[in-house]
Image (tube, rainbow over all chains, first blue to last red; front, side, top):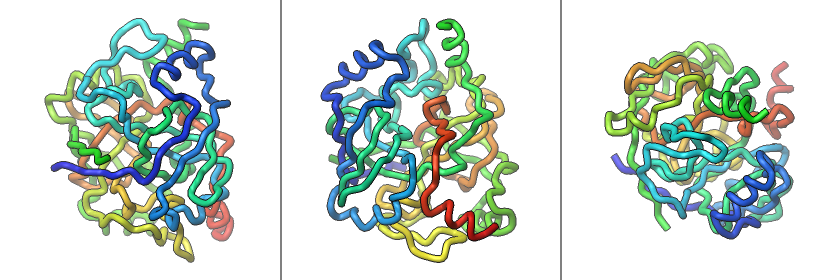
Length: 153
Length: 153
């Protein structure tokens, strides 16, 4: 079984290259809240944007279009060892699909103003979903990421 | 630009058909917490599962393999009107990709024991990611979903 997808839009971002994201990450850890940009949705999909106003956050599903695929191990930023790729958010993974929760500010026609993301300019958008209560897990804990965080404090 | 994806595994679920999910939803609203099942990961991807233990929740990206594509409007359950599809989690959408945050209990080899989901038996799994702090937005608000919730109380 193969699944073939076509973008519904494209990301406009201050990050023009992958390297810009790494630089920002090292400059200010967890510091993407103040990154602003837009999702440009292709005209034929505009009717699908109705009722999106009023949500504070959106789930953006996108393609890691600049990453190689197939890797089963990843070396995350700020970590001292390789990890199984499914325990990381690495862009280099068997299927090059990303998911990020962004702050949604407003819509102007086919453009959605967003902030708080590390997608790069030209990233193909595959889907947009509202962030709902079922995505909110205050009781969550975060495996190796927590011990990493502890190491740093 | 087209993106072609192949499943990394398959969902095992007590829901054998789409209709079973609707029935459960009407029986007990927001009632999927006690639904248990497994993600079976294909053997060639097992090295990618390393370090996944210790995360309480996983983001599962999957294919809506039993749904028609292309719809730009959806009629959500418990709602009185049609909505733009990108403001809903409807399975019938331009790219048939689903995202759900599940409770993760334990791994046994290539099987991940999970709960709290409404995916059906045989659903193709495209990706698994750890649920991290950046996915947790306690300040979120939920657009038309909130007025719907208010109507019901």
